[in-house]
Image (cartoon, rainbow, N blue to C red; front, side, top):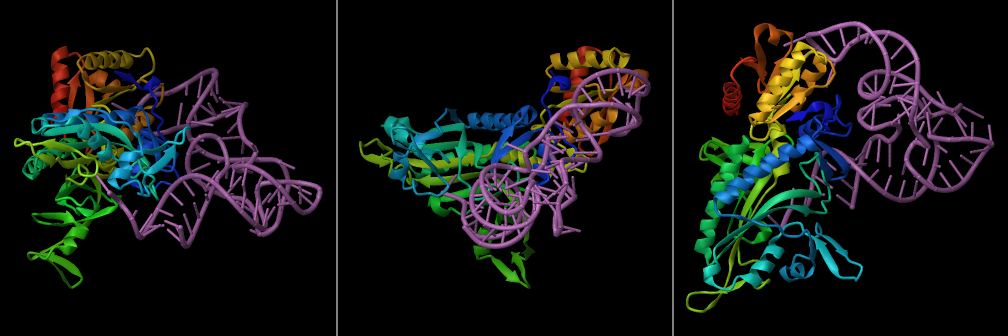
Length: 428
RNA sequence: CGGGGAGUGGCGCAGCUUGGUAGCGCACCCGGCUGGGGGCCGGGCGGUCGCCGGUUCAAAUCCGGCCUCCCCGACCA
């Protein structure tokens, strides 16, 4: 479905000179992202495919718990932010239009969504609600860093729940715990759900979804059956310091760096009060809506996957995120029998719905293999002299670079497609 | 915001100390050979040396100011 000869995939042999983090180096080298300024990144076609794969997983799991997708603006009037008391936040971009009206670029959407719910929701019958969107967030970060791991502009899925009372909120929160657990499992990431600081949100409970990786900027404390944000762990009465080590229930805690890919908060009435989100209950009494807020960053999921799954040759995507399921390499010039066989395989698998990248460029085999391993699609199919001799396209699994049984070039179409699908399904 | 580092063709870098008008590798273009791990030969294109000002006969190089980017820390609804 995609021919590399006409595809914008600018791979580089060398990483940017100023790159430090693995994901930063590899994502640029693999042609997934390019930088425009500090904390400002473009996603190139292959990178955007990965990002969209993460988005789609999140969307499916949000829909599965009854979430309703919508879209709210980034450019917003300052007024709701003044009401919520957050207009003074330093990270909030403020600007004014030609008429002098005060505007902000939203860094999150509690104000917007609460503004709407305050206007629309009147009765207990209108609740509960789970609303979400994927939207750009703008934050005037003091220090963007590590490629796409910490940027000033990024896409976030943020959902908001609206309930009649705390019991309802706790139910909506639990639904999110389930959805987030499934999202993380489907991405193929190593992750921990840890209790986090409720912090300034002043909420009733909060968890973070942390993906351990060297470039992570947070720390998590781990022991068998225990995982917590490191700061939270240090305040845990069960955690003690012994000989400069932290111990909990007889088990030593290990501290690992991790990147926060998602977080969930019980907000209570923190926003519904200042923004006037109220409803009438069964007895006609006015009540504040109970809210929750739940964020997850597709870009961080992607970067964390690169951090967790790469080797000296490049990226090794979990199959759910990979830009393509398979990377077809042909070795042989235009018009060669190898080309003919590869062309046929390409058309057949593409028609069969396999997400396939076909390296049909007129370059040497070494370059093709190197680029394939850098980009890191889970499967590599090779059609060259050997394949013609044996009658089978060679198959290599990227993770571990191990050989898998070949694909018969002359096999029955449906069977071939099924074989690729099954192989793909069996991968991590 | 504090500390450190860096801006020289698309990418990675050298040249700066000791001023004399820019070089290397990769990439790119053309021709040929090659075709299972970034291959080879030949010929090319491409740079106001981050910006502004100063010193000088002459500035990538020296001086002053500014901008941008990276790293460590602080920060991170």
